[in-house]
Image 1 (cartoon, rainbow, N blue to C red):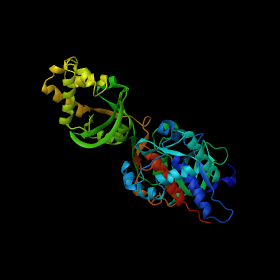
Image 2 (cartoon, rainbow, N blue to C red):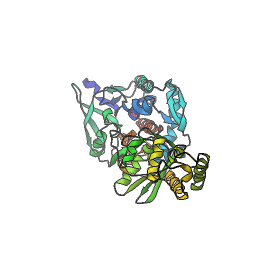
Image 3 (cartoon, rainbow, N blue to C red):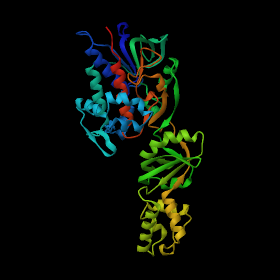
Image 4 (spheres, rainbow, N blue to C red):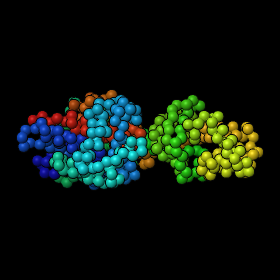
Amino acid sequence: MAKEDTKFDVAVIGAGPAGIMAACIAAKVGARGSPVGLRPRVILIEKNKQLARKLLLTGNGRCNITNAEFNLRELVKNYNNGEFLFHAFSVFGPEEVIKFFEELEIKTKIEVGKRVFPESDDANEVLEALNKCLVENKVNILFETEVADVIFKGKKISKLVLSGLEGNSEISAKEYIICTGGKSYSTTGSVGTGYKLAEKLGHTIIKPSPALSPIKMKEEWVKGLKGISLKDMRINVTKDGKKQFSEEGGLVFTDFGISGPSVLNISGRVGDLMEKSVVRICFDLFPLLNHEQLLGGIEDVLIKYPRQTAKNVLSSFVAERFAEILLGLAKIDKNKMANSMSKVERLTLVKILKNVEITPEEVLGFEQAIVTKGGVSLREIDHRTMKSKIIDNLSFAGEIIDVDGKTGGFNLQMCWSTGYTAGKSCRVRY
């Protein structure tokens, strides 16, 4: 950079979804309040060679932009510490996000679970639109550049020390926004560097841990179910024998344990419980039926096919491989004829189907986690502006703060909303 390019109005650290939104809005809103012909100078600092690498992975490359839950009180229920986001959502919620992308010529569609995707099913199209927004708002971008240090005095940041640049290695700004993300998907550059900057500035970091991550199980029989999916079931999580919470949805068995939407949603809480207690994960395969109703359904099949084996009968309810394992857990001979199954065996089978119990060994780490649980303490951030309560010219946005959501577009929505709020709050004074 040339000497004259070291002073800016707003410096945004991290070019993920939150950082891009913050930079665009800071430039756009600041321009409205600036003298004629004068636009705020906004710089976006990114350690990678490109923008928003993690965005390209969302929705399996389709980019689950947001979730069309327009009732804000219901929306915040999908987050840990969701109440903190209520104001940001009221200003820039799912409806505003959809409109924002439509104005960037991204047509959207709503799928199962209110998930919102671009009609093209292409995350690259979304990234191109965001890049267009940056260009239109004349945001400066530094690629392959890291913030090595932050210099501050009292309650104000004076400059950033950068690495990766030729020539000048320091920049200053009137306002700073940290949007460096968490520690999940470290291959995309999310390695927790923002936490170190925040800590140096006096902020408290709630211990980061993996969230929306697959769970490894202790039971060997799980490996034999690799590839089998379960739908419309309920997961009950217990601690020391007492039920803690439930989650409904689907899961898929892997070669090490379980994954899928419902598993990802509970993984963060399971990880927390495992630190101090004995945890069990219990599947209710037929949550809409009580024990009596399920028993009646099984007996109807037994009567209809009296000469079928127990394995074949149970395969009417679950996948064949799973049926064989369930019979083993129930200690029922898989080759036993239906008409010879005792009342006790039938009741045992119902009990198993309503409560398949497995033991988590570990929640897989940040390499497999989609988001990070933990981050900058919310007590030290103004929820109305996303500004720091410790440093006067600092704001935070995105995954770096202590908020994380379920799968289904909720985490991207949080990034858009907090990025928008932080950018809008950076009113440049002339």
